[in-house]
Image 1 (cartoon, helix red, strand yellow):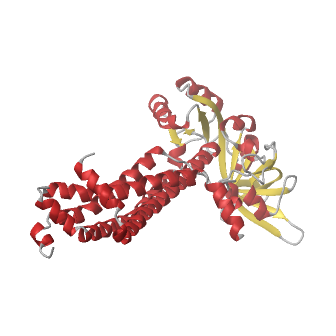
Image 2 (cartoon, rainbow, N blue to C red; image 1 turned 45 degrees about the vertical axis):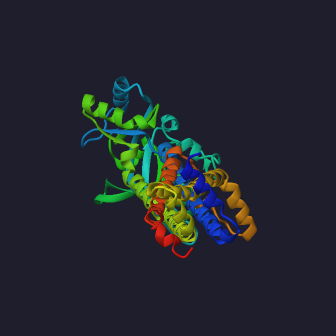
Image 3 (tube, rainbow, N blue to C red; image 1 turned 180 degrees about the vertical axis):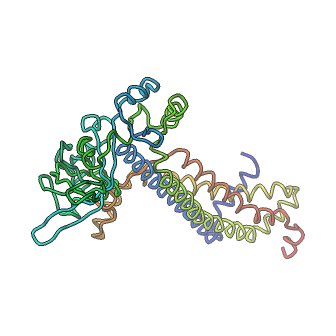
Length: 420
């Protein structure tokens, strides 16, 4: 063992008369540990939510949407064959049409109205492109899915929209769109079609569950009075190939494309910014613990003035004294960091049962699955995040040792031993 490391270990263990300094060192280790644990747990939960929401978006939205420039698609089957010939990564595709609508429900004492985006799909193909069929079940943490995919003059409603309107499968609703219709009194806007609610969808996304309804393509044509479809949406072998496939379609076929990431770019940007801000805020916990290390080392330097004077007198260089106190501070900081990494990883891995235990202990609902749309707290422990947290904690610890170590190395041995 090097001389400096040996002395640093000896100072860290302390003696009976320096029990107070040892207690302060223990508090510093605990502070760093708590800060690192908090960082790991919060970053893991935020990353877990990010991944879970990303998977939900990828499942409910198509990986890639293809459109004509400024016009509807008259022959969607021909376009699907064309893009699949260019892009073998496309494993499924189907036509879609979207219209804004007001949904009206007649109750005994009143009429209920709700706004919706009505999407026309090919039910058979849609099962292979998105999770619409799964959303009509109670699997995967869903609680409200029911019914079946829509047929002619049938509609599937998001469960929040259905709850607002007070309907369930088998009920009748009127879907009113702003299409123009000519009658005996001339042309007028806004006419409705009565439909049967065939199913209730739980997409586990607030906007889809609150604002969307699904009909078949033929019914969508009746609602819009338009020939053709608005777009073709596709499912890929890997959703992260969407940009590559989109560029190929645009360059070779001259069509307009939108990837799943582009459609939700603001959402993903917000999550990323929140994660960075939370990291910066929680780093201040570690920073406070690092200041504790600074104060601990200053107290050690004051206590060891006599020892430092003797060391300098027998020929120990100022550089060695500097290293002794830097090593001591790093030992405190790294001990806290690695304890925090181990504890944080363990806590994050078992966060759901821990949260359930605390909820049972205090009789509170910490994680409402109906509100968050997950039946457990999503956690993702990413090695890259752990590395960044560890490096940040060690760097802050190192910085906290600089001033006390420098002041110890500058101590005049004559002044230190003057009163001995």
